[in-house]
Image (cartoon, rainbow, N blue to C red):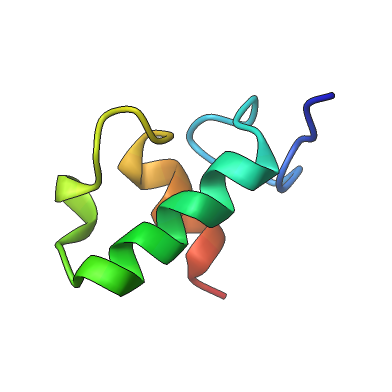
Length: 53
């Protein structure tokens, strides 16, 4: 089951919430730049959009 994130316009609204959370954890754990999050994760603009308040 896929869930939409925010209704007001993330770059890729079809991303699964779990995949976005995993990408945030990956970025925080490794300390890499947002643009360098692995390519098997959702697109970095989507992850960054969901991370920022």
